[in-house]
Length: 135
Image 1 (cartoon, helix red, strand yellow):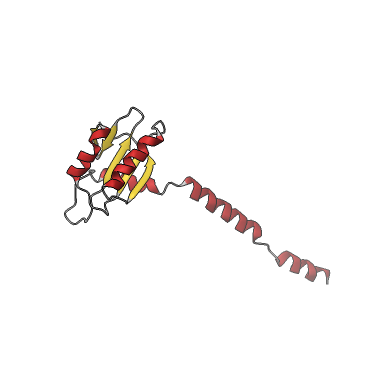
Image 2: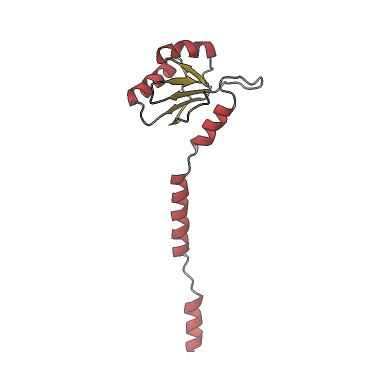
């Protein structure tokens, strides 16, 4: 009888520690992954501003750097000419816009850029950290 009781206790395997470990790993990988980076890299590698014949919208990548430079689709422009550059690019309302900023950029400059984009009716905006374009 004692052996039968021991078998029953041994057969009760608790899955709680396993589930805890799975949830901890899930949370870790969710916090460590950057879902926007592949999207930004794809936009930057598309040529930045070159419209595909079959595409409905043209991606626009804007980078704000700590040295006060503004890069729009791999071209360097002064911030006060940004509206003119956007007018020349003429992105549609559903065009994906990525605003990438260095850690040293003042928040007000990033907000000013987003205000300019909203003023042109562009609302599909993603914000991420900047990576220097090839100069």
